[in-house]
Amino acid sequence: MGLKQDLIDAKVRAALETGMDETVLDTDDGSFIEREAEYVKEAIVTFLTEAEFRITQLNAPIVLENFKIPTQNVDVKRQTITDEKKPTFRTIRELGSLIPGAAGPVNLLVDKVEIETAGVANRIGKEGALLPSIDISKDGRLGKEGGLISNGYVFIGEDPDSQEQFNVDDEQGQKEYTTVKLFREDIEELL
Image 1 (cartoon, rainbow, N blue to C red):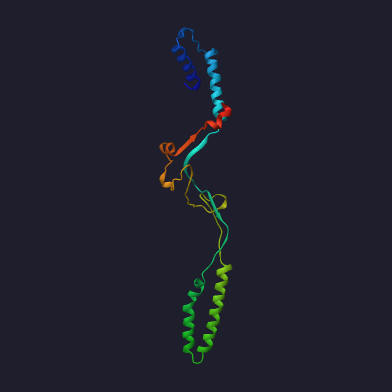
Image 2 (image 1 turned 135 degrees about the horizontal axis):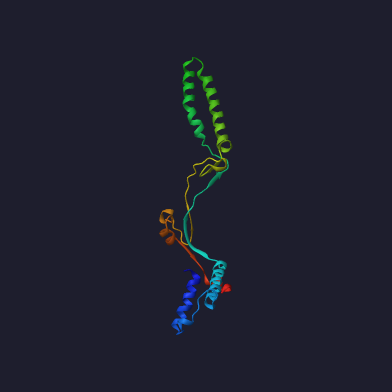
């Protein structure tokens, strides 16, 4: 079968339906009908290969292959640094109160250390803390860490809102969620 044979069969059917004598129809290689079918077949193939088709509906999952984020400044809350020190400062003050005459000087020293710690915490919070860069891939190629797990979807047409709303893993899903059309206005100059 195939397109060329379908064209030959169509020519024969049309000839018979219009009353031509079947014995005069020549469909052998080199005959008029065979040559015409060959040229029409080639014309159709040329037409289809030169035409632009448009995807009008597409829903497909995507796999993120690589993911990279450069080093980022991080805003560390002041309390992250100062709160963990409070029990130590309280204990030092209590120890200072146990030593006769030491409570005042110890409290002054602890106050000074608390002020310095708060100052360091403020500087780190605004400019000093960095989140290391992230450079991973799904399979660990090119010296990157592997194990990237990601998902998402791409669409043309109506947004399905979620990848869970379509499945293109099988032929039925591919037929239902993917459409390619040939628009007449795109091929007018080819006709």
